[in-house]
Image (cartoon, rainbow, N blue to C red; front, side, top):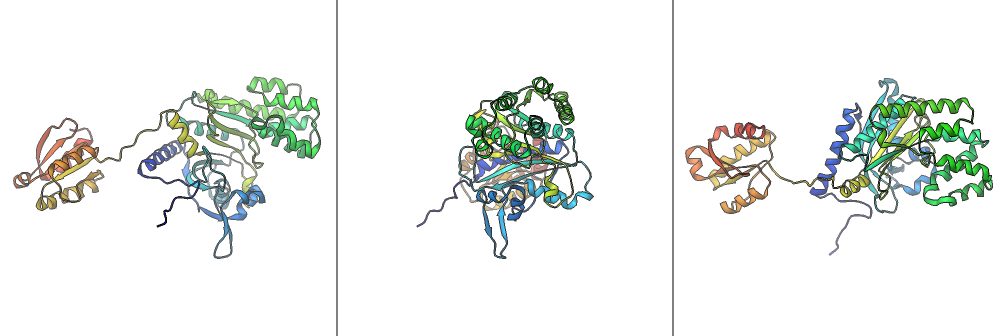
Length: 438
């Protein structure tokens, strides 16, 4: 007989692992709501052309794409950015600015599964539309930081690397490079951390070797880690665009400092994020030990809403993946152990007692309490063991003697103390017990 298993890169969520996932989602939602972001959702299946328009034809190799029964070219969503741009673009004129939206959703990419990366994964996505200045980045980086701190992570566990594609463009332009060569250099910079000097091979093949003096300046720029060093490097390079951009840097870093977040954020011009649609500040969150993939990443993408058919609308966004975050929480001992327990366990005698107990069980459940009981008749001893194993705080005992007297025996499972109460007071006692009245 065939044994069926889940597909490679797809995860199953048994109750214990689903409780972990729900814990992550709950804190994400709680944090986003505190920042005034509104939650949205969207179809998991989208037109393939949506992703090709955003990222080019080569993206199809990374997608779960197919022709549906209506002859349409479709794909399971690999990310949320094109979708949210489509949604916001369609309603932009009716939406109050700034538009602050978030989602928690599942995504699919046809990539080789490895540590921190699966073919099906969940992400928290947050985007802010309609604000062109660095005030939007302040809000998004603050949200990203708090989304991680909510789990008990600190500056000793993660940090946010902040860079700027615009600054790179203006600097390389000032050094005499045209747009095609600038994009070639940025592609090399994106790969430099992993590939070292080999990262410049593609540039050399296309444009010839970089002038050694120019390459030295690029590598020096790559190593800048503070605003002071950035200002010092750019001091001899004049230009209105560069000066305005430095002003944006000061406002962004000053705002984060005022929020008390400077210890989480580091200037790091080695981050340029490979996706060409980014148009300004970019940022990524990493664990301090360097053991994991990026926890989160994002940046500004001012042209994408218009490119996908909407109005000209500035935007900043980021995403946090649940896989890498889960690994980080495990490594720091910050993932709680979840007990699938109940509040109340009912110990029941015979058939007559069962019918009496059912009325209370249903009423307590309707009032929001987690109540369990033995589905079939079993001995009292086994029921008390089940009550202790259930994680319940109290047991309600429905025996023949109790029923004859019109009472229910209540046992506190922590100290095993007992009391008898009239049956019509069961709901009130349980409510008082869990609200601290008992």
